[in-house]
Image (cartoon, rainbow, N blue to C red; front, side, top):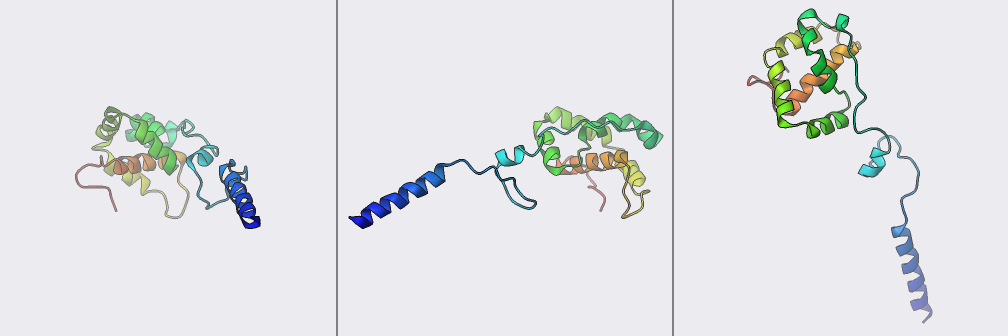
Amino acid sequence: MKICWMLSLIACTALQACTEAPSAVPLQHGQIGTAAELAAFGPTVPEPIHLRRDRVPPDLVDLIPLAEKWGIGDDVLRDEMQERATDAEKQAMADALKDRHERITAWLDTFPQGQPMSDEAAAFMYMQLGVAELGLWPQQGPPR
């Protein structure tokens, strides 16, 4: 009888522990959390970026609005943005960049390796990455 009582007590305690909400201890770098825990860390919509025209080659200035929209450096936010975008929006970006990738890449290659690039260049780079991630890169494929 005593064993039954103890087993019942253990079972009730375990059940209560399983049904309690997770502790409010914040996740540490490298830990894996639930979607709800991760959502608490920041926005699911990227902050709008504003690129300076004087830091973009003149022949690429017309692409600044696309880079401001699609040039998201955060992988998770970029993926979420791509999922929310319509097929028409994705195709419009791909069409606008179709014959411009080589020129954009040439500009990006002017930044020394291992050195930080401008926010403008980074936005163009991430925009190109987004095109590749969406499988919308022109037939020859992205540069290696």
